[in-house]
Amino acid sequence: MVVFDCERMKHPNTGLSVFCENVASCLVRQRNTLRSTLCVYVPGKFCGHWGDGVKYRKVLLTDKLHIFCNPSVKVWHSAHQQTSYIPPKGVKQVLTVHDLNFLYEKPIKKHSRYLSALQRHIDRADYIVAISESTRRDLMDNINLKGKPVEVVYNGLNHFDGDIVPPVSRPEGKFLFSVGTVLPKKNFHVLPVLLKDNDYKLIIAGNKSSYEKKIMEEAANFGVQDRVSIIGPVTDSVKYWYIKNCSAFLFPSVAEGFGLPVIEAMYYQKPVFLSDRTSLPEIGGNHVFYFDHDFEPEVMVEQFRNGLRLFENGGVDKELMKQHALSFSWERTARRYIEIYNDLLSVL
Image (tube, rainbow, N blue to C red; front, side, top):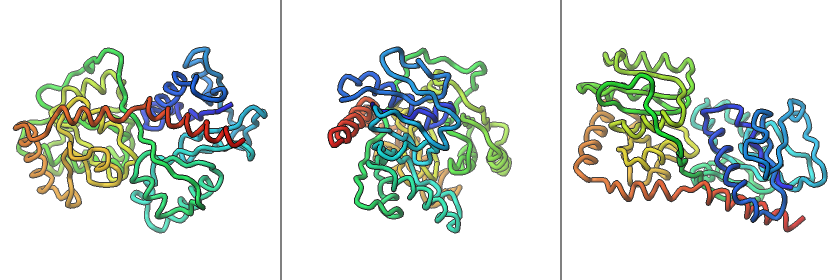
């Protein structure tokens, strides 16, 4: 039996939850190519989520101390590098590493503690997957991999099958949009300056935190606080409405393992403005615009204006942008994971 850990689905509207949902869905659809039974490890409310064609194992609090596995469990896929749910020895472990964001978020004096914790997870794993070349490089540079294979398997583009519906209160006029958990690493506070000398609004969606205060303080510094809205988490149907209808999509994150919203905005052929940090240049390629020079306000304003002008004048091939986004496929992601599972099963 192969177990895929979807424990992080208990935190909706997060990147890890999206990863677990999409990979599990594709694994279930492709399970006939797996040389074993597939089991998903889920919070209780998700038991049965993918129908009857797959086995379910409920997450228990005691599993943090010890997970009891019957002899049929041969491979366990831990869906993120900070998991507290580790299979017992004797079970092969695939470990997906999303990022080493602490290298960019935390003071240097704290790096050793986080690296030690990650090293313990790497030591336990049999096969390591990074979700971007940027993450793989960080692993290679900071962790003793002890000769273990480290492969890049990209995330996929989320295809929304439901109806795209507007929010209850639609923004009036033109607006810029960003989405993500409202944390300092997302760097949202550099964005209000882009509202100077125009009539754009800025809308930021995502789970809130105390960092919201800093964003609004920066907005007040530029006298645009009445045009900045931090609206909290939104459903997929509303998120895609915002992406589809915004004048530009902004994502200035300084620490990102992949950046799923980036390819969503590219799919909708919007002008996209990113930071030039960690994985984002790798994901955006030459189809988007970048904020560099350490987010110096006047430089950002100039880059934004020039980018919009270039986009509106046909300087970006929108169809190539969309095809680039479509090149990231959850089905392909799951197919590669199944190949990895099968390889591990073949040596048992």
